[in-house]
Image (cartoon, rainbow, N blue to C red; front, side, top):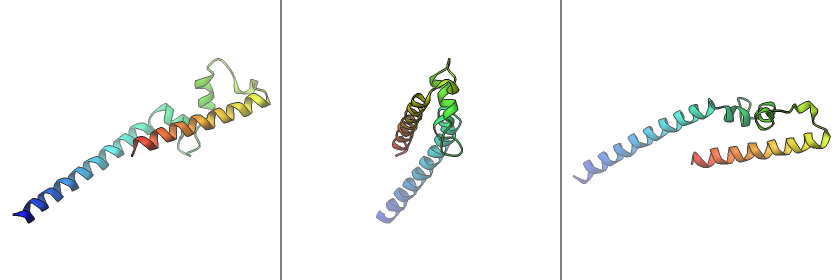
Length: 93
């Protein structure tokens, strides 16, 4: 009797693991469709600074930035990407 219960429990755990894996895949697919993912990660993994700049500075143009503003924006973008990746990686467990 114990062996049957153990096999049943094992099957339940295996089914649960499969269901969780499917849910995580669907979550990842959904995240990849968001503008935020495209901005901070994208297909290359490097993100898209131009999209980020347009999002964070809707009335400005990146070409209007001077050297120091450009470097500052590079740093802001890097920190925003790192923050996004930390949140996404943390939530995937």
